[in-house]
Length: 140
Image 1: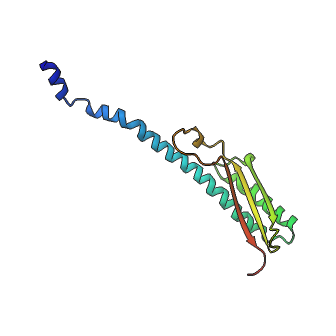
Image 2: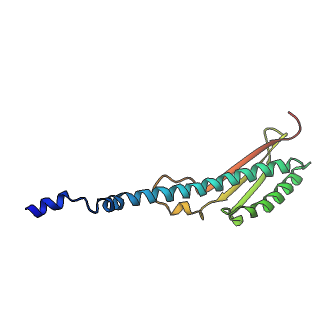
Image 3: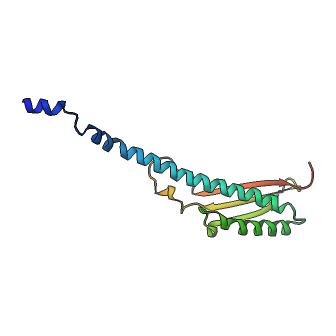
């Protein structure tokens, strides 16, 4: 009986047991934050490329020329980003049907290769990242 009470009062190893209980949750949270950070980085990259491609394409005088300028910009810039697979990027340059003085560059990226999809813990974003930028031609 005394041995049992003595074992209950001992504090040796308490820190190891607490670490064993808390460590999986801690590491899961850290890895999830890293995964979401990579996803958000890819999402921001796609938005920046869309905005910059639209600004580049504004120099075009026709829809074909705007498309060619945006195409060249996207193909050139997509090489510089580490989390973007250039084979999974698609884009389109379209004139706005409601306003002839505007056009939109839309970029779609299949983000299924990113490491976030290996996390089975929290709500997941869409595997397809779709961003766009609209530019007005001319003045105001």
